[in-house]
Image (cartoon, rainbow, N blue to C red; front, side):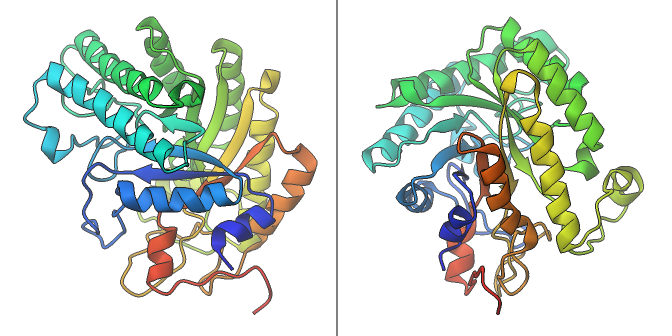
Length: 347
C-alpha cells in the first residue's frame, strides 16, 4: 500500500515536505536531494488526496540547511543585499503560487529549515559573527521578505508561518532566538522545534523548554522534527556526549516508547500550545542506489510497519483530531522509484 495511506490509516493527519531551490539528485554521501518544485508538488498532491495537512519546508538553499550550514543557492550568490531580499520575496511568492495553482496550497510554510543561526550565509548569519546586531537586521529583513512573499501569493493570507529552530531541548537557545525575532518585529504564527535526544538533551530538557516557551511567547509550538532508532546504530564519538540521553532501548518497542513520551510532553505543554509532532524520515527503508543514513524509519528493512507507527492510531484516539501527527516524507517517491515497498500487515 501507499506509505502515506498507511500512515493516515494509522492516525497521521499532517505531512511535511522539504524543498530545495536548484538541487542535485544526490548529495556527497549518496542521499537523495532531488526535492525540486516539480517533485515536491507531486508529493503534495498525494498528501492532499488523503485530506492531510501539508507543511512546506523551503530550505532557501540548493541542499540541506541546518544550524551548521545555510548555503546560499548558487544562482543567488552574486546578488547584493537588496537584490537578495527581493529574490527571497519573489521565490517564496512564486513557489506558494505554484502550489496554489496545482490545488495543493500548504497549510503551513516554514521560512527556512532549522534557522537558529540564520539563513543565506554569510549575509544572514547570526552566530559567531563580528557585528551581531547588523547580522540580525540582515537576517530578519530576509525573513520578513519571505513572509511577505507568502502573504502576497494566492491564498497565502490563510497559511500559517513557522519559524523553525533546532534546539528543542534548550530554553536558553529558544529564548535567545525568539526574543531577537520579536525585538526585530518579525510576525509569525508557530514556533517550530526539532528534538533528537542525542543532540538536544533529555526528555526533561524538552519538557522544560516547552513549558518556558509556552509561558513566554504567545504562539503555538510544533515539534516538526523528531525521531529515534528502532535498531542499534553506532553514532561514534557523539555517543560519548549525547548518548547518555538516549535512555530508550534502540528496539522497535523502545522507539514506540520514545514516540509516546515525546507526544505526551508536547500535548501537556501549558495553555494547550503544543499542537503536534512530526516524525522525520519515516519512510527511510534501504533500497539499492540510495544511501539511508539512519534507522529512525517507522518501517523495518522489509518495509513492514513498526510498533511506533501502529501507536499512531492509539495516540489519535486518545488526543483527538486536532493534534497534528505525521512525518516528513520528502524522500518517499524516490525510495519507491528504486523499489521500496511498504506494508502494515504481517509478511
